View: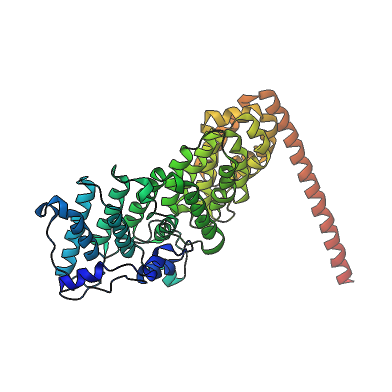
Length: 471
Protein backbone atom coordinates (compact mmCIF):
# COMPACT_ATOMS: atom_id res chain seq x y z
CA UNK A 1 0.00 0.00 0.00
CA UNK A 2 2.79 2.43 0.95
CA UNK A 3 4.73 1.73 -2.28
CA UNK A 4 1.62 2.30 -4.34
CA UNK A 5 0.99 5.55 -2.50
CA UNK A 6 4.60 6.73 -2.97
CA UNK A 7 4.44 6.08 -6.71
CA UNK A 8 1.32 8.15 -6.96
CA UNK A 9 2.89 10.92 -4.87
CA UNK A 10 5.99 11.11 -7.13
CA UNK A 11 4.15 11.30 -10.42
CA UNK A 12 4.91 14.17 -12.80
CA UNK A 13 2.82 17.25 -12.05
CA UNK A 14 -0.04 17.72 -14.46
CA UNK A 15 -1.28 20.98 -15.93
CA UNK A 16 -3.93 21.04 -13.23
CA UNK A 17 -1.19 20.88 -10.58
CA UNK A 18 0.48 23.94 -12.04
CA UNK A 19 -2.79 25.85 -12.22
CA UNK A 20 -3.35 25.23 -8.53
CA UNK A 21 -0.45 27.54 -7.66
CA UNK A 22 -0.50 29.94 -10.61
CA UNK A 23 -4.09 31.13 -10.77
CA UNK A 24 -5.00 34.54 -9.32
CA UNK A 25 -7.14 34.53 -6.20
CA UNK A 26 -9.14 37.66 -5.25
CA UNK A 27 -8.43 39.08 -1.82
CA UNK A 28 -11.04 38.33 0.81
CA UNK A 29 -12.58 35.34 -0.99
CA UNK A 30 -12.66 32.30 1.28
CA UNK A 31 -14.15 30.06 -1.37
CA UNK A 32 -11.35 30.83 -3.85
CA UNK A 33 -8.67 29.83 -1.35
CA UNK A 34 -10.43 26.60 -0.49
CA UNK A 35 -11.09 25.75 -4.13
CA UNK A 36 -7.41 26.12 -4.92
CA UNK A 37 -6.51 23.75 -2.11
CA UNK A 38 -9.15 21.23 -3.23
CA UNK A 39 -8.38 21.20 -6.97
CA UNK A 40 -5.64 19.43 -8.89
CA UNK A 41 -3.77 16.62 -7.19
CA UNK A 42 -4.85 17.38 -3.62
CA UNK A 43 -5.17 13.99 -1.88
CA UNK A 44 -8.62 12.89 -0.74
CA UNK A 45 -9.31 12.47 2.97
CA UNK A 46 -7.20 9.69 4.42
CA UNK A 47 -8.72 6.24 4.75
CA UNK A 48 -7.85 3.54 7.23
CA UNK A 49 -4.48 2.00 6.44
CA UNK A 50 -3.51 4.73 3.93
CA UNK A 51 -0.62 6.00 6.08
CA UNK A 52 2.31 4.03 7.38
CA UNK A 53 4.98 5.14 9.79
CA UNK A 54 8.11 6.46 8.09
CA UNK A 55 11.57 6.25 9.69
CA UNK A 56 13.02 9.26 11.49
CA UNK A 57 15.68 11.37 9.78
CA UNK A 58 18.38 10.24 12.16
CA UNK A 59 17.63 6.61 11.31
CA UNK A 60 18.59 6.95 7.64
CA UNK A 61 21.90 7.91 5.98
CA UNK A 62 22.47 11.56 5.12
CA UNK A 63 22.29 10.75 1.41
CA UNK A 64 18.73 9.36 1.83
CA UNK A 65 17.31 12.23 3.88
CA UNK A 66 16.13 14.32 0.93
CA UNK A 67 14.09 11.36 -0.35
CA UNK A 68 12.68 10.82 3.11
CA UNK A 69 11.86 14.54 3.33
CA UNK A 70 9.82 14.23 0.12
CA UNK A 71 7.99 11.15 1.43
CA UNK A 72 7.09 12.91 4.65
CA UNK A 73 5.74 15.88 2.67
CA UNK A 74 3.54 13.48 0.68
CA UNK A 75 2.21 11.86 3.85
CA UNK A 76 1.44 15.24 5.39
CA UNK A 77 -0.77 16.23 2.46
CA UNK A 78 -3.56 13.93 3.66
CA UNK A 79 -6.54 15.67 5.24
CA UNK A 80 -8.49 14.53 8.30
CA UNK A 81 -11.84 15.24 9.89
CA UNK A 82 -11.19 16.68 13.36
CA UNK A 83 -14.83 16.99 14.38
CA UNK A 84 -14.56 13.43 15.71
CA UNK A 85 -11.40 13.11 17.82
CA UNK A 86 -11.60 9.31 17.96
CA UNK A 87 -11.83 8.83 14.20
CA UNK A 88 -8.53 7.75 12.55
CA UNK A 89 -6.54 8.68 15.65
CA UNK A 90 -3.54 6.55 14.58
CA UNK A 91 -3.30 8.20 11.15
CA UNK A 92 -3.61 11.65 12.70
CA UNK A 93 -0.77 10.85 15.07
CA UNK A 94 1.39 9.60 12.16
CA UNK A 95 0.87 12.88 10.34
CA UNK A 96 1.59 14.90 13.49
CA UNK A 97 4.87 13.05 14.12
CA UNK A 98 5.94 13.54 10.50
CA UNK A 99 5.19 17.25 10.77
CA UNK A 100 7.28 17.45 13.94
CA UNK A 101 10.13 15.73 12.11
CA UNK A 102 9.91 18.21 9.22
CA UNK A 103 9.90 21.18 11.59
CA UNK A 104 12.94 19.86 13.46
CA UNK A 105 14.76 19.13 10.20
CA UNK A 106 14.23 22.66 8.83
CA UNK A 107 14.94 24.28 12.18
CA UNK A 108 18.15 22.35 12.89
CA UNK A 109 19.77 23.36 9.57
CA UNK A 110 20.60 19.68 8.98
CA UNK A 111 21.23 20.36 5.33
CA UNK A 112 20.06 22.52 2.48
CA UNK A 113 16.70 21.38 1.12
CA UNK A 114 16.69 20.71 -2.61
CA UNK A 115 14.61 23.00 -4.84
CA UNK A 116 12.19 20.23 -5.78
CA UNK A 117 11.66 19.42 -2.09
CA UNK A 118 11.10 23.09 -1.29
CA UNK A 119 8.43 23.21 -3.97
CA UNK A 120 6.76 20.05 -2.66
CA UNK A 121 6.89 21.37 0.91
CA UNK A 122 5.16 24.64 -0.09
CA UNK A 123 2.56 22.60 -1.98
CA UNK A 124 1.92 20.50 1.12
CA UNK A 125 1.65 23.64 3.28
CA UNK A 126 -0.76 25.23 0.79
CA UNK A 127 -2.99 22.15 0.72
CA UNK A 128 -3.28 22.22 4.50
CA UNK A 129 -3.69 25.90 5.35
CA UNK A 130 -5.55 27.30 2.33
CA UNK A 131 -8.98 25.93 3.11
CA UNK A 132 -12.60 26.99 3.43
CA UNK A 133 -13.02 28.84 6.72
CA UNK A 134 -16.06 28.02 8.87
CA UNK A 135 -18.70 30.77 9.05
CA UNK A 136 -18.21 33.27 11.86
CA UNK A 137 -20.92 34.10 14.42
CA UNK A 138 -21.84 37.25 12.51
CA UNK A 139 -22.42 35.22 9.33
CA UNK A 140 -24.75 32.85 11.18
CA UNK A 141 -26.72 35.48 13.13
CA UNK A 142 -26.41 38.32 10.60
CA UNK A 143 -25.39 40.77 13.35
CA UNK A 144 -22.20 42.82 13.59
CA UNK A 145 -20.22 42.13 16.80
CA UNK A 146 -19.41 45.30 18.75
CA UNK A 147 -18.14 44.01 22.10
CA UNK A 148 -14.57 42.69 22.00
CA UNK A 149 -15.14 40.52 25.10
CA UNK A 150 -18.68 39.35 24.42
CA UNK A 151 -18.01 35.93 22.86
CA UNK A 152 -15.48 33.18 23.42
CA UNK A 153 -13.03 32.96 20.49
CA UNK A 154 -13.48 30.13 18.00
CA UNK A 155 -10.74 27.48 18.26
CA UNK A 156 -10.12 25.35 15.16
CA UNK A 157 -10.24 21.62 16.09
CA UNK A 158 -7.50 20.88 13.53
CA UNK A 159 -5.05 23.19 15.30
CA UNK A 160 -2.71 20.33 16.47
CA UNK A 161 -1.78 19.87 12.80
CA UNK A 162 -2.21 23.45 11.64
CA UNK A 163 0.14 24.79 14.29
CA UNK A 164 2.94 22.50 13.13
CA UNK A 165 2.37 23.42 9.49
CA UNK A 166 2.52 27.14 10.29
CA UNK A 167 5.62 26.50 12.40
CA UNK A 168 7.22 24.66 9.46
CA UNK A 169 6.49 27.57 7.12
CA UNK A 170 7.85 30.08 9.63
CA UNK A 171 11.06 28.09 10.19
CA UNK A 172 11.54 27.75 6.43
CA UNK A 173 11.22 31.51 5.91
CA UNK A 174 13.54 32.55 8.74
CA UNK A 175 16.13 29.84 8.06
CA UNK A 176 19.55 31.12 7.00
CA UNK A 177 19.72 28.22 4.51
CA UNK A 178 16.65 29.49 2.62
CA UNK A 179 17.78 31.23 -0.56
CA UNK A 180 15.42 34.11 -1.29
CA UNK A 181 15.98 33.84 -5.05
CA UNK A 182 14.80 30.22 -4.99
CA UNK A 183 12.07 30.59 -2.35
CA UNK A 184 10.36 33.49 -4.15
CA UNK A 185 9.41 31.07 -6.95
CA UNK A 186 7.13 29.25 -4.52
CA UNK A 187 6.28 32.02 -2.05
CA UNK A 188 4.97 34.22 -4.82
CA UNK A 189 2.26 36.85 -5.03
CA UNK A 190 -0.50 34.26 -5.35
CA UNK A 191 0.74 32.53 -2.20
CA UNK A 192 0.81 35.87 -0.34
CA UNK A 193 -2.76 36.68 -1.44
CA UNK A 194 -4.03 33.35 -0.15
CA UNK A 195 -2.12 33.88 3.08
CA UNK A 196 -3.85 37.25 3.49
CA UNK A 197 -7.21 35.54 2.92
CA UNK A 198 -6.57 33.36 5.95
CA UNK A 199 -6.43 36.43 8.23
CA UNK A 200 -10.21 36.26 8.29
CA UNK A 201 -10.10 33.13 10.45
CA UNK A 202 -11.89 33.31 13.79
CA UNK A 203 -9.09 31.45 15.58
CA UNK A 204 -6.77 34.01 17.28
CA UNK A 205 -3.92 31.48 17.45
CA UNK A 206 -3.90 31.12 13.68
CA UNK A 207 -4.04 34.89 13.15
CA UNK A 208 -1.02 35.29 15.44
CA UNK A 209 1.01 32.85 13.33
CA UNK A 210 -0.17 34.50 10.11
CA UNK A 211 0.90 37.90 11.45
CA UNK A 212 4.40 36.65 12.29
CA UNK A 213 4.81 34.82 8.97
CA UNK A 214 3.61 37.73 6.81
CA UNK A 215 5.88 40.09 8.70
CA UNK A 216 8.85 37.76 8.07
CA UNK A 217 7.95 37.50 4.37
CA UNK A 218 7.82 41.29 4.15
CA UNK A 219 11.23 41.54 5.78
CA UNK A 220 12.96 38.79 3.76
CA UNK A 221 11.37 39.13 0.31
CA UNK A 222 11.95 42.76 -0.64
CA UNK A 223 10.46 42.15 -4.08
CA UNK A 224 7.06 41.51 -2.44
CA UNK A 225 6.97 44.63 -0.25
CA UNK A 226 5.01 47.01 -2.54
CA UNK A 227 2.62 44.18 -3.44
CA UNK A 228 1.95 43.31 0.22
CA UNK A 229 1.20 46.95 1.04
CA UNK A 230 -1.23 47.21 -1.88
CA UNK A 231 -2.90 43.92 -0.97
CA UNK A 232 -3.42 45.03 2.65
CA UNK A 233 -4.73 48.32 1.31
CA UNK A 234 -7.33 46.46 -0.77
CA UNK A 235 -8.40 44.40 2.25
CA UNK A 236 -9.00 47.62 4.16
CA UNK A 237 -11.04 49.07 1.28
CA UNK A 238 -13.20 45.97 1.17
CA UNK A 239 -13.66 46.05 4.94
CA UNK A 240 -14.54 49.77 5.08
CA UNK A 241 -16.79 50.15 2.05
CA UNK A 242 -18.26 46.67 1.47
CA UNK A 243 -18.34 44.04 4.20
CA UNK A 244 -17.28 45.67 7.53
CA UNK A 245 -16.38 42.08 8.47
CA UNK A 246 -12.83 40.81 8.80
CA UNK A 247 -11.34 39.17 11.86
CA UNK A 248 -7.73 40.03 11.01
CA UNK A 249 -7.75 43.84 10.79
CA UNK A 250 -5.99 44.23 14.16
CA UNK A 251 -3.19 41.83 13.16
CA UNK A 252 -2.73 43.52 9.77
CA UNK A 253 -2.48 46.89 11.52
CA UNK A 254 0.16 45.47 13.87
CA UNK A 255 2.24 44.49 10.86
CA UNK A 256 1.75 47.94 9.34
CA UNK A 257 2.83 49.60 12.58
CA UNK A 258 6.33 48.14 12.24
CA UNK A 259 6.35 48.79 8.47
CA UNK A 260 5.48 52.47 8.96
CA UNK A 261 8.20 52.71 11.59
CA UNK A 262 10.71 51.79 8.88
CA UNK A 263 9.56 54.31 6.26
CA UNK A 264 12.37 56.52 4.99
CA UNK A 265 12.18 60.31 5.04
CA UNK A 266 11.03 62.34 3.21
CA UNK A 267 7.92 60.17 3.11
CA UNK A 268 6.73 59.00 -0.29
CA UNK A 269 3.43 60.30 -1.65
CA UNK A 270 2.24 56.69 -1.87
CA UNK A 271 2.52 56.34 1.92
CA UNK A 272 0.67 59.61 2.57
CA UNK A 273 -2.16 58.48 0.30
CA UNK A 274 -2.33 55.21 2.23
CA UNK A 275 -2.84 57.21 5.44
CA UNK A 276 -5.57 59.38 3.91
CA UNK A 277 -7.41 56.73 1.90
CA UNK A 278 -7.14 53.66 4.13
CA UNK A 279 -6.06 54.32 7.72
CA UNK A 280 -8.19 57.39 8.46
CA UNK A 281 -11.39 55.85 6.95
CA UNK A 282 -10.85 52.81 9.22
CA UNK A 283 -12.38 55.02 11.94
CA UNK A 284 -15.74 54.67 10.20
CA UNK A 285 -16.81 51.02 10.94
CA UNK A 286 -18.86 50.36 14.06
CA UNK A 287 -16.60 47.61 15.39
CA UNK A 288 -13.55 49.88 15.65
CA UNK A 289 -13.09 48.70 19.24
CA UNK A 290 -11.59 45.44 17.93
CA UNK A 291 -8.61 47.20 16.35
CA UNK A 292 -8.53 50.79 17.60
CA UNK A 293 -5.38 50.38 19.68
CA UNK A 294 -3.40 49.14 16.66
CA UNK A 295 -4.95 51.78 14.38
CA UNK A 296 -4.07 54.58 16.81
CA UNK A 297 -0.47 53.32 16.94
CA UNK A 298 -0.20 53.41 13.12
CA UNK A 299 -1.62 56.95 13.02
CA UNK A 300 0.80 58.26 15.65
CA UNK A 301 3.70 56.54 13.82
CA UNK A 302 2.84 58.55 10.71
CA UNK A 303 2.76 61.82 12.68
CA UNK A 304 6.03 61.07 14.45
CA UNK A 305 7.59 60.49 11.03
CA UNK A 306 6.10 63.70 9.58
CA UNK A 307 4.30 66.03 12.02
CA UNK A 308 2.98 68.10 9.09
CA UNK A 309 0.37 65.36 8.65
CA UNK A 310 -1.20 66.05 12.06
CA UNK A 311 -3.80 68.54 10.85
CA UNK A 312 -4.79 66.11 8.07
CA UNK A 313 -5.32 63.39 10.67
CA UNK A 314 -7.29 65.69 12.99
CA UNK A 315 -9.61 66.81 10.19
CA UNK A 316 -10.06 63.14 9.23
CA UNK A 317 -11.03 62.25 12.81
CA UNK A 318 -13.56 65.10 12.85
CA UNK A 319 -15.00 63.85 9.56
CA UNK A 320 -15.72 60.39 11.00
CA UNK A 321 -16.58 61.59 14.52
CA UNK A 322 -19.37 59.46 16.06
CA UNK A 323 -22.61 61.23 16.89
CA UNK A 324 -24.59 58.66 18.90
CA UNK A 325 -21.94 56.12 19.94
CA UNK A 326 -20.44 57.33 23.23
CA UNK A 327 -17.98 54.45 23.65
CA UNK A 328 -16.55 55.17 20.22
CA UNK A 329 -16.40 58.87 21.09
CA UNK A 330 -14.24 58.10 24.14
CA UNK A 331 -11.84 56.17 21.87
CA UNK A 332 -11.68 59.11 19.46
CA UNK A 333 -10.91 61.55 22.28
CA UNK A 334 -8.07 59.34 23.52
CA UNK A 335 -6.58 59.12 20.03
CA UNK A 336 -7.07 62.85 19.49
CA UNK A 337 -5.02 63.57 22.61
CA UNK A 338 -2.17 61.39 21.31
CA UNK A 339 -2.25 63.19 17.96
CA UNK A 340 -2.27 66.64 19.61
CA UNK A 341 0.76 65.60 21.69
CA UNK A 342 2.73 65.36 18.44
CA UNK A 343 1.16 68.42 16.76
CA UNK A 344 3.15 71.61 16.25
CA UNK A 345 1.82 75.16 16.44
CA UNK A 346 1.53 75.76 12.70
CA UNK A 347 -0.55 72.62 12.07
CA UNK A 348 -2.63 73.31 15.20
CA UNK A 349 -3.69 76.72 13.88
CA UNK A 350 -5.04 75.18 10.68
CA UNK A 351 -7.52 72.96 12.47
CA UNK A 352 -8.15 74.51 15.91
CA UNK A 353 -11.52 76.13 15.15
CA UNK A 354 -13.42 72.99 14.01
CA UNK A 355 -11.47 70.96 16.57
CA UNK A 356 -12.59 72.97 19.60
CA UNK A 357 -16.12 73.26 18.31
CA UNK A 358 -16.24 69.49 18.53
CA UNK A 359 -14.50 69.44 21.92
CA UNK A 360 -17.02 71.98 23.29
CA UNK A 361 -19.84 69.62 22.30
CA UNK A 362 -18.05 66.78 24.06
CA UNK A 363 -17.70 68.93 27.20
CA UNK A 364 -21.48 69.23 27.36
CA UNK A 365 -22.14 65.55 26.66
CA UNK A 366 -24.62 64.00 29.11
CA UNK A 367 -22.45 60.86 29.05
CA UNK A 368 -20.01 61.62 31.86
CA UNK A 369 -17.16 59.53 30.37
CA UNK A 370 -17.18 61.60 27.18
CA UNK A 371 -17.20 64.89 29.07
CA UNK A 372 -14.54 63.65 31.50
CA UNK A 373 -12.26 62.40 28.69
CA UNK A 374 -12.52 65.75 26.91
CA UNK A 375 -11.58 67.63 30.11
CA UNK A 376 -8.58 65.32 30.66
CA UNK A 377 -6.92 66.93 27.63
CA UNK A 378 -5.99 69.87 29.86
CA UNK A 379 -3.70 67.49 31.80
CA UNK A 380 -1.25 67.57 28.88
CA UNK A 381 1.32 70.34 29.14
CA UNK A 382 1.86 70.35 25.37
CA UNK A 383 -1.86 70.75 24.59
CA UNK A 384 -2.21 73.45 27.26
CA UNK A 385 0.75 75.24 25.65
CA UNK A 386 -0.95 75.16 22.22
CA UNK A 387 -4.18 76.48 23.75
CA UNK A 388 -2.28 79.26 25.57
CA UNK A 389 -0.68 80.42 22.32
CA UNK A 390 -4.12 80.63 20.67
CA UNK A 391 -6.25 81.53 23.73
CA UNK A 392 -8.00 84.44 21.98
CA UNK A 393 -9.46 81.94 19.47
CA UNK A 394 -10.00 78.91 21.70
CA UNK A 395 -11.58 80.59 24.76
CA UNK A 396 -14.59 82.11 22.93
CA UNK A 397 -15.38 78.70 21.40
CA UNK A 398 -15.44 76.69 24.63
CA UNK A 399 -16.43 79.37 27.19
CA UNK A 400 -20.17 78.73 26.95
CA UNK A 401 -19.66 74.95 27.24
CA UNK A 402 -17.64 75.45 30.44
CA UNK A 403 -20.24 77.88 31.81
CA UNK A 404 -23.07 75.40 31.10
CA UNK A 405 -21.17 72.52 32.76
CA UNK A 406 -20.51 74.47 35.95
CA UNK A 407 -24.16 75.46 36.25
CA UNK A 408 -26.00 72.37 35.09
CA UNK A 409 -23.96 69.19 34.54
CA UNK A 410 -25.35 66.31 36.61
CA UNK A 411 -21.99 64.61 37.32
CA UNK A 412 -19.99 66.13 40.22
CA UNK A 413 -16.64 64.87 38.87
CA UNK A 414 -17.25 66.60 35.53
CA UNK A 415 -18.36 69.70 37.40
CA UNK A 416 -15.15 69.79 39.44
CA UNK A 417 -12.90 69.21 36.39
CA UNK A 418 -14.69 72.01 34.53
CA UNK A 419 -13.99 74.44 37.37
CA UNK A 420 -10.30 73.51 37.21
CA UNK A 421 -10.14 74.01 33.43
CA UNK A 422 -11.91 77.36 33.71
CA UNK A 423 -9.42 78.47 36.35
CA UNK A 424 -6.52 77.35 34.14
CA UNK A 425 -7.86 79.38 31.20
CA UNK A 426 -8.30 82.41 33.40
CA UNK A 427 -4.69 82.21 34.63
CA UNK A 428 -3.41 82.14 31.03
CA UNK A 429 -4.65 85.73 30.46
CA UNK A 430 -6.69 87.27 33.28
CA UNK A 431 -7.38 90.51 31.42
CA UNK A 432 -8.70 88.80 28.26
CA UNK A 433 -10.68 86.28 30.31
CA UNK A 434 -12.47 88.98 32.34
CA UNK A 435 -13.13 91.04 29.22
CA UNK A 436 -14.67 88.10 27.39
CA UNK A 437 -16.62 87.13 30.51
CA UNK A 438 -18.20 90.61 30.52
CA UNK A 439 -19.04 90.27 26.84
CA UNK A 440 -20.51 86.85 27.45
CA UNK A 441 -22.61 88.15 30.37
CA UNK A 442 -23.91 90.99 28.22
CA UNK A 443 -24.74 88.59 25.39
CA UNK A 444 -26.56 86.31 27.82
CA UNK A 445 -28.54 89.31 29.15
CA UNK A 446 -29.49 90.29 25.60
CA UNK A 447 -30.52 86.72 24.84
CA UNK A 448 -32.69 86.62 27.95
CA UNK A 449 -34.23 90.00 27.05
CA UNK A 450 -34.99 88.83 23.51
CA UNK A 451 -36.49 85.61 24.89
CA UNK A 452 -38.65 87.60 27.34
CA UNK A 453 -39.87 89.93 24.59
CA UNK A 454 -40.67 86.94 22.39
CA UNK A 455 -42.68 85.33 25.18
CA UNK A 456 -44.60 88.60 25.74
CA UNK A 457 -45.48 88.81 22.05
CA UNK A 458 -46.72 85.23 22.06
CA UNK A 459 -48.72 85.94 25.21
CA UNK A 460 -50.37 88.98 23.56
CA UNK A 461 -51.25 86.87 20.53
CA UNK A 462 -52.69 84.18 22.83
CA UNK A 463 -54.76 86.79 24.74
CA UNK A 464 -56.06 88.27 21.49
CA UNK A 465 -57.03 84.83 20.23
CA UNK A 466 -58.81 84.08 23.52
CA UNK A 467 -60.78 87.36 23.33
CA UNK A 468 -61.81 86.65 19.75
CA UNK A 469 -62.95 83.18 20.75
CA UNK A 470 -65.05 84.59 23.66
CA UNK A 471 -66.54 87.31 21.42
